[in-house]
Length: 90
Image (tube, rainbow, N blue to C red):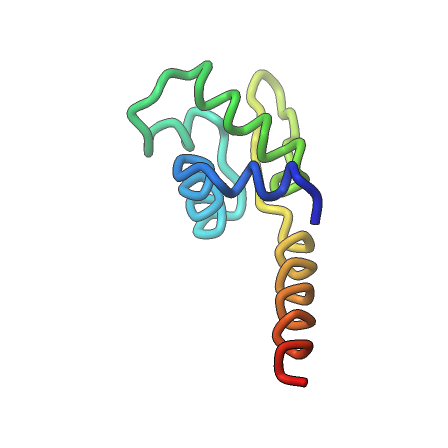
């Protein structure tokens, strides 16, 4: 885990974005924005932080950018947590 991962999940809005993407395979920024009462530049900043932490993927299709969850990162996190738990049990 790197610092960008922990910074990314520290914010409630970013955790909500991750939850929304978990429930939908892929969404445009506009579709994600419908779930928030924040400015588009602010949402864009949140998406950028999540992308920089490799928590989400983005794909440009025409004039829209679509976002999806990077599930492999969460598998890595789960594996890391399980390792910590096993170390505690010893």
